[in-house]
Image 1 (tube, rainbow, N blue to C red):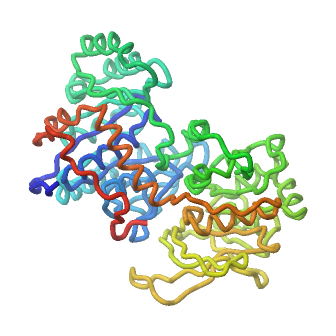
Image 2: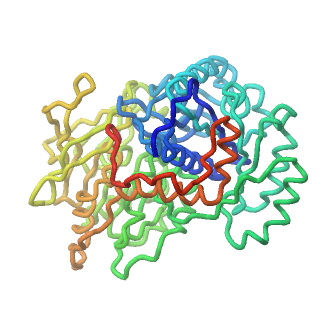
Image 3: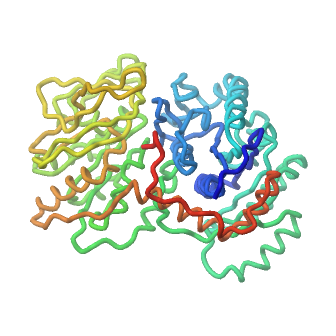
Length: 538
């Protein structure tokens, strides 16, 4: 399809939900890809996100993972304008506030609301204005529910944000959790008359069963509220795209297809402050891998490998690991020949000690690590957020594997004695990759133990398969060829999602709401080649 004529000022559409985890992020990504397929210049936007699952932009800034994924759906590089404010929870009442990709400071909930939100409003408006100046359509996403009456007066992410952009709102309800009609009607009742007027229709998400049986309810809902139901989206299992955070982790595990008879058993420690859980996503798609998330000693069993994932608060999660008895078990398991992998915070835990003299992570100045690596991590006030490219050269492979990923951490790890490194990464100078390489991570104990700061390392197909085959041969099993092409599958997943949503959502009405000419013949929207990779996208 030929590109549309650029719109003078980007039109907007906003998805809000009756609650968290109703599918707003996925539906936003779907609309982004649909509009791109139809020839428009599109960008996502979420003014404020709360998530420990983050994404590094090409210029080394940090935004919410969901907006990074949505930018990929738009086939454009992610920028901090798409998520100018990111809240990363560190404890029960405290979050690190990240503004335009850089940490500002830690706030408790009351101080943030009373002190910083008035400033945040201007930052949000400016970011949205820049996106609208560059794009034809900005697909906005709300957070939680717009009906939180105790938060509405200083809202910067739901109805007030919609009013700033003059955005029509689609209200999304999750029928899979039950009570969808009550949640939609209840939300509308709590909204002010002006806010109710802004809601242009409902979307019922994650439907299972015969939609004709739902018809009486849909008719009642439209009569009760005077608003149309624009779509009933059937549940789509195994979408193949990352989740915003760990809230939907259990559901993702339930959706997995049955594993093969010779499936590796990999236990992932489920930290209380688990972050960047998307690092594990490729393992969930491998036919010869069974993933279990473990938080208690009695759950651990005897896995073929243990993964210590990322943590937003490494010190506190390490303390809990020790209190649960899992720390002693992991040390004994590793010394008895088991395979242990540490990713970012998990890598830091595998060292001799962690020092926090500036109290960046906690109120503990020093804590002993698991002692599996001769390393020491010092937490600093500066946060490293960088994309990464390089090579993996380990386990006696005939050739080095190309590697790409990203780093997000506030600790500097020092080597207390010579170690073997699994990765060689390029340095960045003036925003460009140089030919200067540096070693990264630790490879120890005959390759059974390894740790790295690289998020996304398991998204690299050749490296992941080499590691899995090493586990297989250690059990006396044959190495598997491995057919999963995770990054290619991810691009195809956007097209699959877009087609699914297009079939069940009145996209023409949505175009009309935005004041744009609708696409009357949907089959003319040419599906893009799923192998196309946009420049600058990881």
